[in-house]
Length: 221
Length: 221
View 1 (cartoon, one colour):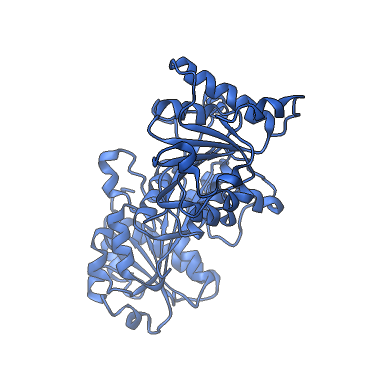
View 2 (cartoon, chains in turn brown, orange):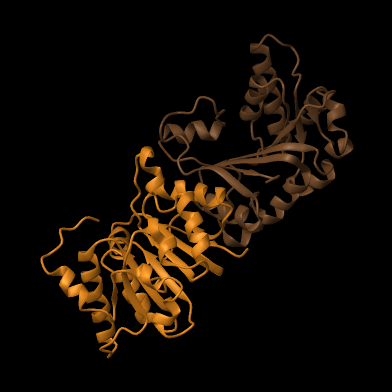
């Protein structure tokens, strides 16, 4: 998602050292130190406006969350969302979430091997042209990066509304010898699963009756 | 598919010892002897009226084919179809195909371990109620039977028009640690693949613009 940066956005972000990490490579190997505990770290790659990761952080205080995106404007919106979610819970602080400016290409420069326990990929860009297949976040070259960054209990949770991206991804996970489970070709078919936190995109698609595709892949199997 | 047996059907079948095998368990471990060569054996489980397996046998004379179904009336129709396909090729004989009366439950009584090289599952009964999940031909209990009957180059080729059966099957193959490839969520999306032989059901569904789901699974990976 491309957004024009508002003037002063970077200044707003630079002030939020309690929530926003603009140079994540500095924390490679020290993320648990940053969180101040040894709890598992779950990251969303491409968090967009941050609704999913903010709600997850509010719902699961025992997990450390990271939301990553490339664009300052999204980090700003994400920071507002995260503070709002925790404000509603009566907290002026966001105790278990950092929003990270970063590019998935450089994942290995941000995380030590095994430093993460779960990766969420929600409604990633489908890059429909075959000449752009390598940019899809479920391309085997990315899956190799995820395998390295995840620990032995590591999982990848992927959902999309794109049939073509899901088909590509099924083959990609299979080729990469990642065991899949909980594969769904219509996530909200039976009922709206209230236990699953919806992204902004997802709520829109579900409202239109479009199917959502989902799978999990596990590392240590 | 349940069909009332026509009177005399069994007599028609009993006369066709060159094409129809009514007691397949007798050939366990000796199927290559029956074919008179060491070429790979490909079987379709649930051949219906036999269009797919008949055409495959006509298109690929270097492969040994078996078409299996439970119902005499289907075996009779299959035998007519197979003879017609080969007649059109100028042959009074069907050199590389046998039609087998059998129940997939008893696969292990019909085939020695590793005696088959490929299993086709085309438009198997989806058994949509969860209490009938064990009857689905892609249930892990059947996949274990297939693994045993297939050799080290063995493959399973599965296609269906049922979204729910395909979703179940993706999970089932994955749980059974069978590596999948060529997964398609809309087989005929881009163009009608002329290299793939269509079943009777499939031609109908494709004509209606309905998606066909397909995957392959490989044994020795």
